[in-house]
Every structure is written in C-alpha cells, then in structure tokens.
Length: 548
Image (cartoon, rainbow, N blue to C red):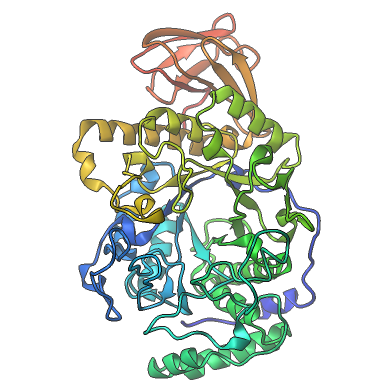
C-alpha cells in the first residue's frame, strides 16, 4: 500500500485528549441513511477471484465464499442503485486480507464475512484488489456517497493449518470473557476460536514473523518497515500491538479518503484506544483532503460509528442514558471518539406503534442524555439473532417505521428486496447472511417494495429534519406528525391513511395558502384552514413545501 506523509501531521503531535465533552454531531450524520453489506454476499462482479489462496467450495451451508466482490459493488454504484435508495454512505464488512484456511469448530467456515484478520495492510483477494477499493471509493464520492470501512482492533482470525497463531507478545492469554465486569469484557479472550490482541499493553513488540515473511514474498517489506519507522517517529507511540493496528487502519484513510469507520467489538477494547484511533483517522482524512481538494465531498471531519453490543436508546440492555455499565466501571463511548453508536434497541421495539417509537426516540435524541449525538437504527443485521421480522411478513410497514424514525438508519443489504433471513439448513448466524436475492426483482411485489424503500430514502435524504429534527404528533386519526430542524425545511408525514381522498392537519407547521407536495405520489395541494386534502392511491403522505 502506498502512503504519504505531510507536514500537516506535525500539527497533531502531542497527547491525545481523552474524555472531553462529547460534541454535537453534524445533522447530516444524525439523519444519514447507511447501507450495510457483506461484499461477498452482495454482487459478484468478477468470477475470476472467487477462490484464491487455495480456498475451496467445500464449506458448510452458507459458510463459504459466494463470490461477491468490490467489482460487484462498483457496478451497483455506477448503475445508480444506491442513489435511487437515497443512500448517504456505504458500510462494507471488513475487506482486509483474512485467514486463508477454514475453521472446523462450528462446521466448516471460511472468512467470507471479513472478521477474521490476517493482514491489515492488504485487501483480501476474494474481494478484489487495492486498486478496485480505490476505484470503489472514487466512484462513490463522484455520486455524493461516502464510504465507511469496518475495522477490527481486538482480535485476529482463528488458527488454522494455513494461518499460524500470532506471537504470544501480541495476544491476551487470560481467561475467556465472562461478561461480569470491565475486566471480564476487555482484558480477556472474547471467543474461544479467536486470538485477542493485547490492546491494553504499551510494551513494545516485534512484528509477527508471518507478516514479515509475507511482505518479503510480496516484495514490500522494506516499504512497510520504513513507513512504520516514520509513523512511530512522528507519533512517539511505543511499538505496542494497538499502535501497529491503528497505523495500518488509518493508512486506508490517508491513501484513499475513506470517510469513516464502523468499529467492531467496541466494548471489548479499552476506550482510550478508540480515542487514539479517532485522532489518527482525523489527521489522515485531513491530510487526504489537503492533497485531493477536487475529490473531497466537503470539509466534514472523519466519522466514527461504534458497535457497543446491547447499547440502545431507551436504556436497552446495560445502558443508562448514554453510559455503558460494565457493573464495576461505566464508560461514555461518545467521549472517546465516537460520533454515533449502533442502536440495538430499534429491532426490539419495531413492532410497537410508530408514535410510541418516534416520540420516545425524539425525546432521547433532542432532550435527553443523547441530545445532539448520533445513533444508528436498524431492523436486521448479520449477527443479531433478534433482528426484526426475519420471516419478512411486515416488510412494508417495517420499512416505513425505520426510515421515518428519529436518528440515522441502516439498510441491511436485501431489506429493500425482502432477502430471506431464515434457512433451516443454516447453522448459527449464517441464515442472516444469505446471498442478495437479485432474481426476486422479476416479481412485481419485490419491485413494489423496492420502490417503497426508494421513496422513503429519497425523502429522508432531501429533508434532514426527518432523522435529525424534533418530532411532534399533530393528530391520532389519521396518525400525523411533523419534524422540524433549525435552518432546514419542516416536513409533515401521515401514515395508515385510506386510499383515495384523505384530509390531514398541518396546523402550526405550514401556513394557509402554502402549496405542499407529497413526496410519495408527486401530487400537490394547497393548505386551507390548517389542513390539506390529497387524493392518492397510497396510504402514506410525505409532505414538504418545496419538493427537492
């Protein structure tokens, strides 16, 4: 990987500031629509890279590589698929080089998901090349879409015949995590088949021999060594495991202008390490933008989204306000570099009435402990066995609740096509990682569902008040609410409406005489006596004074 240095780095020398007051997050990120995919399961754009490194098509059901790759994602970016959905950012599961072998402990499984790292400095050949990653980011930026990389700091991949264990000096050798307290979450082994990085240590260590040998074979050893020398000379950090990884992760930002990270297993690493990662990523993106003024989208800072398992709005799990409680230690991850945290609560409450969800979330995000901070709501994910509506029986109503909820939202690949999330033949979480069901677009009902998601996504993207604004119920029947955000246009939404003629109140939001456009149908009507009447064939109205 070719990287650069800059005099700008000198401005950031010094001790990282930890546990400062969390700042209000840009409304863009508080309203953003983020599309999350496992590249291997999304779209196969290049069949020539389906089985490199001697990998074989011999895995247990849904536990091997399916062929999806960066080329397949590029094809969908260039076809406008994400723009049509109103997507602001694409988040891909890790694309760094993963272990080459398979793990037999839980049936034969390969690292198709990307969460079993082998080399943080290389793109896994199953996904493509470094040049293709650069092409993907450039293609996304040209279309106004940001790219988030999924990053791992706390573990390597399992040991296999092809993938030796990392040196003992790099690894935790204590007991397996029992989740009872801080030490039982952080200073322990997260899983029996993973090898945890010793992130709490500042003791210098030598590079793993397998990396040195690999880089030598690839003809880039001296380059990597000289870059490490420059990094440690600039920062003054000790050559401890976490600093190597932070250097390797932020190189992707410095080289290609990655806009943000989704950070894996946040609560299993000491929070101070995340603050350092954010500091170095901020620096790397600032340097990239300085060198590429024509390619940058804007001057926003680096964005960091965290997976704190069981964190949630409305005190879901071991969360009090925005504080994660380990029982013997409490941590506010927003004070350690995170702009947003994944909201595990939404999938648990998505079956409740919309007003109950919307009003409680708006209170938490605009008046409570989370005021001005970011959360990412979702219906389903790759590892949440309690994902909402895995049987895909409530696809349309679930889409409406998610896309109209306060906070940012995650579309998990295939939500918009009702991709199957259950499979009796699959073991563990494999059923939630099925290949994208593109062929279902031949069905009229799938095309109609996709169109529903597209309208909701484009409305949300056009009006930041939808996710970042303050919610106010206007009427129970028909259920109508407004969202307002300072400096942005307000919106009014009505749900569960009768087909045909419908009259709703917009009093206090839009003045009489204002012409409103329904973003869903494209119809227009004038406000009279605080109300507006539409005659459409749908049961949803998405109203604004100026159609964008």
